Length: 341
Length: 287
Image 1 (tube, rainbow over the protein chains, first blue to last red):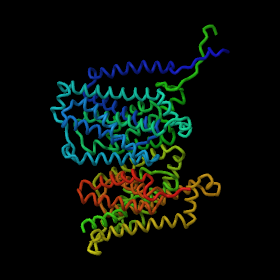
Image 2: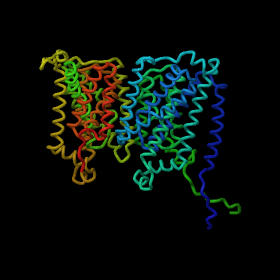
Image 3: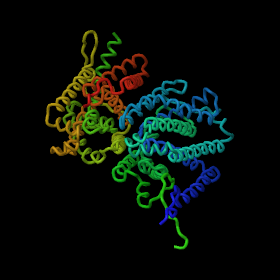
């Protein structure tokens, strides 16, 4: 039995098929403005943005161990900066969203320096305090409508593209684009050297530290990158809504509770989990939304049951049964198939 | 004199925040659990108080006789039935389960009581006041503060002078050895949560007499309680009282400068203390 009969590979047949199907799905989604109605286009756009938020939260909680219940801070920050930069700065909305991402990273640096002093669950509530500070601060800005909020002026909306259909298509493509960007960055990041360090920290912090990984710095990097991307997603969310108010922009239910449920139900600590969770979440929402508060109670209950009975979520169940990995991160040893044998 | 008044009123408000915080501090001390649903449980207690006092025609303070045992019972069942399964090295399960619980309680209250703000009718107690050294103090805030001091003194005494407190401290120090010494840690944790929610019941009733409430305000109460705990130093009950007072004073002084600044001032003082003294003002000295 020679060593050459074995080889180490990262990819697998399933992953190749998944990548192929994913590419086809992406092409169909890119073409959506030509085949989908207005309402469907809006729904798919919203689904994309939730997927982006869920992937980002998953990177923080599932890999870096940073459980935040205050991501609405950056969603609202991005949304408000879109409004401020376009209304006062006269910037193009797309440029404004990109700048909002940069400023989101900038503001997250001192925030991280402060709340990284809190451990574990207290970190979580600390992030919520930060989100409250953001909400109350933006509510003080009377030029942006204070506590009651403001709408994006029609001149700025018109500057986006000619005609309503073109504008909606552009908003949709931006949402789709940023989602692909987020999922791809998370995937590539986790495959990189830093990503390996992050996975090591997730598995055992003490052992990772003893191997020379700078835990604080790795977590800090994840927090800053996540904040920047979350702010951009926030900008896109409110580009779709065209109206912003402090309560909507910094809503803990909309931008954190739902996102957490998506990740937990889909499978925390995997790239596939948020995708499945988002699909399940929207399927539930479209069928049960008429029930209003009951629907939210069901969602909370499902999340609790999943956390207690299947902490790895739906994807965890699938993977433990079929040994699948659609986004290959690990390496596996394979025996070469001999033609004659 | 206005400023002295603001500081005194803020101190009294701090009593309420200390009541929010004491239950949170207690369960963290015993089992390292942070209950995200804590604020929603305070609101639940307020609604239970409202229903009890309306249905039985009782004064809200008399409703405490019903609400305290009810909340304590809920706490024990919740801990043994659900939360004990989440405890372990991983912080994620307790956090996410209590977060789900928070959403469930909030929406159940919304379903049962609608989003309309409610208030408990405590009669003359609400407006009664007395003069003290040139200041006018409300009887209710003074009573709230006195109750907060009594609750914290009671918890302190229970922790260090009773067999139950010894069981709490032993389990907190080392769960496995406490178990070997014949303590059932599932039961001890259940009792800790029961006690925590008994304090929550008191906090909920005083909240409901003082201001109007609706199902959505739980998150805010959790944050105030949490800030009081961190300002005072983790695991220090008297520190929690001081933390509540600092937060209350920051809010009333902030409101005095500009009414829109009330909550923001409280949060900023919290962040400032976190920056300067990350372990709080009076951290418990661990061996």
